[in-house]
Image 1 (cartoon, one colour):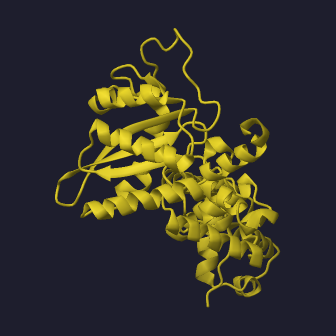
Image 2: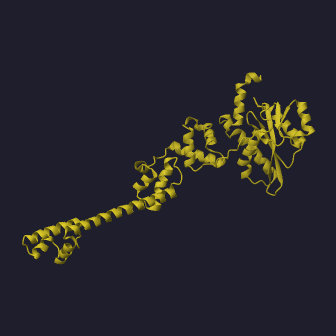
Image 3: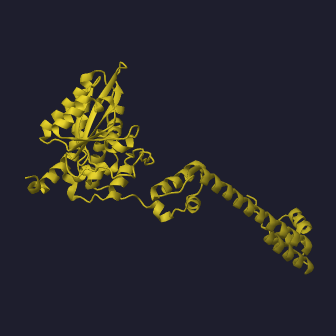
Length: 381
């Protein structure tokens, strides 16, 4: 195998050979001492024999080395740009996405691990640190969150946390950050609802809006429409108590008259044992008919009609309609009226007894009503 010499080694041997020739040594001893052939000696002498040639050759080697360094820097810069454009399009808000980005840079672009960590701002020791083993408690908690997500696909992590706090998990550390982290790691993130700009109807600032102060103080109702699989329309008559957010009735029919509305309200009074102080509704023909007005006057119930074309003034029942649509109607296909009635009653039970409500500090409407009744027993008596 031929031995390669660096320019510095060649120059050193040329100088040694020239010194030996000047001292009177024959050429055969010089090439033997230098361990090269005579042809190689003359080639080296021609290339590095003078100081000028040696300096030029040295400078050439330095330029080649500098050129290689610049090429390497340019290649690293272009690789860094490709990595940032492909795997780091946005800002990393947690450690795990950054680790995934580093792994992607290594696997897809063939970048060294050290280089990928430097470009993406990932600490190498943190990247190599193995994830701790999942405890038995956390495994059970993850399973419980998945079960809630399967049963209630439209719920988010807040409602899931409130549901767990109401069950046997109350003694476990279930702060917001832990539940949210586990919910996201299990891939159970729900699409956030778009926030709508709050609107105010005519005369909203002229007088104070009637606000419920106790259960059955203000009862709101409204109609909601859907269709069966055959294309025929269904109307749901939704009634809620504004103070406790309790769903008092969800009645499904093809059509309603004012007499049907009166009958539904009488059934609610029979079930709760209390007549509402006020009813809030829009100015639809079923709500402004003489039968409903006469019933209100007879029972002594006040009316709080909203302005025409101002559904935002009846916000509680409108919000209820939206939840009913999102959590039940949008995910079900109804073939008959009997099926529509069953689904309405099913969701009413879930809403009142299982579904935590954000405005009630995570309690269900039924639990909130019971707590209020216990705290105000003397006042009720």
